[in-house]
Image (cartoon, one colour):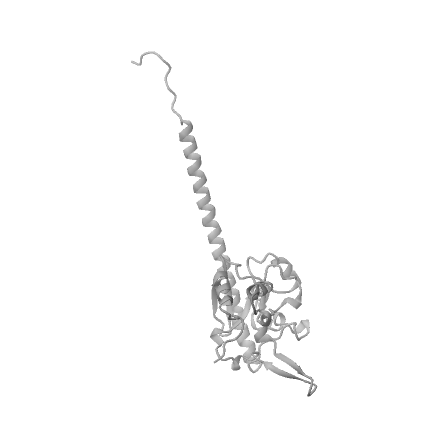
Length: 233
């Protein structure tokens, strides 16, 4: 028999309640982080798949055009941009030309453009005007796949910068300006090196795709190397 006093009702103390709230908050953060990480991984994987398909299309295009890469708006009409001339070689071009995570994805899709940009080095011949002869002289030409010294080390397509204007004129990089002390900053005007989990996917001339972190890319520039320039033999 219980003597005197009121019967104590079962329940949580304030400390127990606070502890439970902390545990739930931590679990919520872990679940959110896990979902975010999974989503980012899925986007990175989808982007890599897009680029591989574009890479296959580039190989087929080059095969049909004696090794020449497609052109960009730099020196061709809008209708001759790689975004359109590659279409017959890539199947569902609408699906693969838009990169997951691009904040302007819907706008670019509606405008018939792309989240990806072609490397200036492989799309544009570098020429200089010779006043003595009154003609242009070729200084650099990496626009033919069969003449690339090391295709597996030559980047052909980058992920375009988030703030690139929705305009066909932004279908390529300006890689030859990525030099000097501000080379990395110049590159960031064209490309988004941290689109996926602190890095981005890069398509190479042999159609393989590599993931490079923004930190690694910055270190490459700091070493005095322009990663967009095709390596010599």
